[in-house]
Image (tube, rainbow over all chains, first blue to last red; front, side):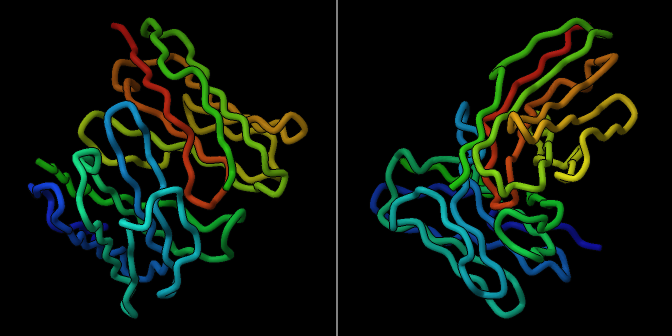
Length: 118
Length: 108
């Protein structure tokens, strides 16, 4: 079974630009969640999508958005990039059943997209 | 959302010693408590998890204990080895939020 695939793996942008990152989950998984990881900041939760609907959202500004397609693939977009957006963006997929507070299955992470904002 | 506090933020032990990492949570409705390990340059991976109807779960050298009354759960690693060196993350529920992480260093 193929793992979680994220593209692109590396990208460099300048302030003010926007970026779109893609995540293809494991076949059969309906939940995709996104995280921002910076040195010393752990895994900051951005949002989670389940069956094309945003089910959970973290504390990030509106510049960060996402969506999920009918095949469960997900994209996240960051508009008006700032220097502080430089980070590793990880997505994770799971079967996603039941929902918030309950078991939704093991998270399988992709290798991440490393974004550098200059 | 759920607040999950994780301690300590860094932990250094000698090879062969035990390591304990603790997480506390606030939501009484939480019923699933996973631990993830992230080695340097790699993606996080689940190493053990526990449901709320169980007080302890073991898998070889690692174990997780849960105290629902006190709302905390702990990861225990016995007979630590250098390959246990990594960052460990807990989550207090299944809404995808993790603790801040614990960087464990096992000195040979």
